[in-house]
Image (cartoon, rainbow, N blue to C red; front, side, top):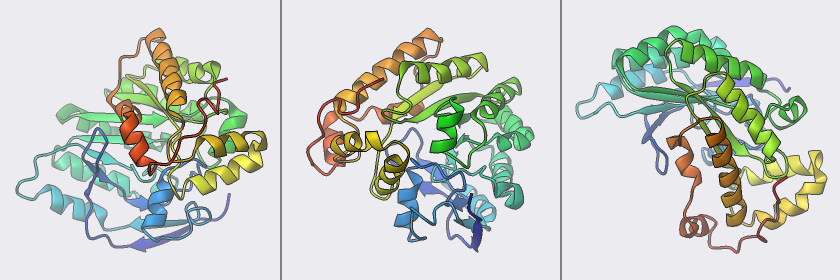
Length: 312
């Protein structure tokens, strides 16, 4: 892994309004992520913020918003704030390795606890257990939900697609320990990578692991390739799975995979969710984009051939 440069900056606001998700507000203490996931949608946000090249700088130049806890405290104290759920780390993982040094996420949790504000989190890092005391305290006074993202339990695939992340089995252990402490924690298999992690066996391995470790939910969604993400990811596929590249290029004419492919992936996930006793989870609703919306989101361009990326 390349050496990480931390760039300390001051932020003017902490709360960021979000659309099209089960929550309306997010807080991101860092921009860029050393987890280096090749599919990460946050590369697009990094480019939009003009922080650098999302292909080269995203995982090596991390922006640290050092004053964010104080800014969040001020914003949550404003008249008119109703305590709506705040999602931590939606643009990059707020428990990535530099959190061990800066401890901004812990400071943000302290602010949220002081205001008894509802909070959610998506992370790939067992470092979340460092703050188990705060998560447990929050769960006693407000609505809390933690999701550990696990895309695969295959060690070879894991090391290729997300080389800077902790072992997925350690993430499953974190799910178990969070729930044992009274902190509701689930598993997200997001994104499902066509031709790589979309087989029945691959998805079932994650679902079975989630159930065995007491996850309260299991959600999944298919890969989306926004501008800035697409270029990096297809370059990765060309190097790691060159035989899949033509299929990806045909199928991903826009942001989304072919409609029929998404439908079949969702059916497969639903069968496995039922098999392992999971109810429907709100975090997955965003993946079920109506056909009209999917067409608009892709800029109206024609979709690739149906099932150009067949399920394995």
